[in-house]
Length: 184
Image (cartoon, rainbow, N blue to C red; front, side, top):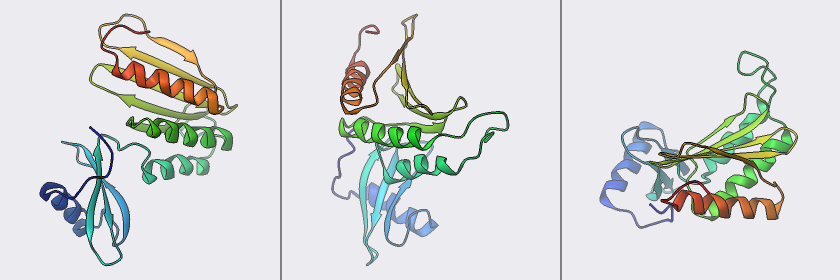
């Protein structure tokens, strides 16, 4: 399913209007409307009150809300998980934000971002038979875990966080998520 903007449809207009009525979407700006039984919808509301459906997808790639969520990790204290988890560093937050933009540039959907219990930021992409977990550590290093249903071994590997490293990783990620064969 594409996350490209598309014209308003009757169904998406209903979701958008419902979101505004419930106060989930702002009177103007954009908001993500989550439906546990379906996909997320991003709606835009003009200052004149016009409601427009912007995108649909499970998690909607690199939405402003996703970026805000990652940036919000900067306010977490050490021990945020009730144990000894280090707070995500400014470096891990900055790299994770760039990583999300690189993933979105390939029109891939991020399902979850969360602080890591070992210090840093974790990013999850799921498909029916594929699972990818990316973790950017506080020291700027990063790892990718790839699992595929029916394949016994998972693949864990480091990836570079500079421009070329992110480009290579997102290319591999795109191929993996599109692959119907074994783990490569």
